[in-house]
Amino acid sequence: MSSEDLQTPEQVAPGDCPVCCGQSRGSRGTVPGFVEGMIYEVFECETCHSQSVPSDTVIPVGLYDAVYRHAGSLPGYYRYHRYADTTRNIKNPLYYLSRSEDVYWAVTSILSERRGHGQGTVVIDVGSGLGYLTAALRAEGYEAWGTDVSSEAVQQATRRFGPWFFLAESSASWGDLEVEPDVIVALETIEHVSNPAKFLASLAAKVNPGGEVLLSTPNKDRWSPECVWETDLPPVHLHWLSEDGLRTLGRRIGCTVELVDFTEFNQLMGKPIVEVTLPTTTPQKAVLDSNLSPTGLAPPPQIDGFRDRLVRTPAFGRVVALARRPRQHTDSELTPSQLTARRRSNSAVARYTSARDDPAN
Ligand SMILES: [Zn+2]
Image 1: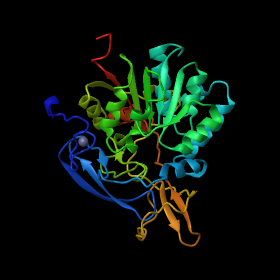
Image 2 (image 1 turned 30 degrees about the vertical axis):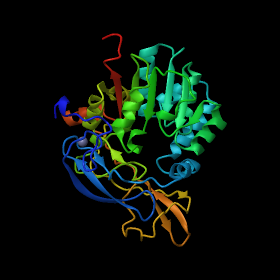
Image 3 (image 1 turned 180 degrees about the vertical axis):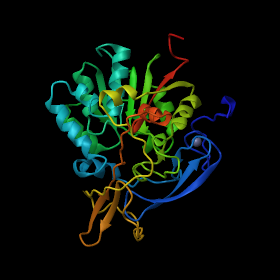
């Protein structure tokens, strides 16, 4: 696809890839939904190999409030609760976060490389959730603000850390926050929005000249090509993005794109080289609200083997979640594919800078 063929973010036909606008997609079958009774067809783009669910997928009202209300016991989210509690109680929370998870290491490294010690740098943390990253950045001297679509998340973050958080459906409703961000961070957020290119374009339009947008998202290329939707089930996640997809997203809106190499982090943390193939299952359960199932459909017969899946158990009348961890193995000698594996992490982090606005260009 040449740059002339690239469409603007608003122009994605219903059957096209919402990540790269590729016009050829194939069905990869169905997966059960995060909410009991829901089933979603998964499509894979033949150009960028990202997977997405249909563009008219609806997110049930109150889903994210329920997720954050139960974050302490929900697989995939409970670690966020631990980060929030720890961040409040230690002296150097940004260092702690950077040693806890790949994406925080990436953000910390990029910010310190760009801005020295952080004084005066304005950062907006989009999808701030429980608020610990915003709070950790503030503790380091950044002028950081958090925004989230969940009022439950905003309330919890404000209670824990202070009045640095605001509720917003999109960057269009940031009107009350009169700051001009140097950097916008949106970690594990783009996979939740229906139009990823429009989302990225709206953020890129908000940063100061020379600023950048840092996105992270679960990395599909970490998994073998035959895998289908090894990420949070729809409609919590609407896309499973490939590295190609992340690069094309930036090109579509005129940004330069750089994907973070995690070799240093993986070596720093002594991480084994993980080449993820087909997963094994480690079920975990967590109780969620029982009123989240919006359909009268019977649940799918197969309930094991999917992660972060909510099912209502008739015996208890409750909704539970299942999750599984990828299998890990270590090798002493590095083959080319292991070297590639070492560069990758569970999430990809992409840096988007607008070449047009960069004063250095
Ligand atoms: Zn695509």
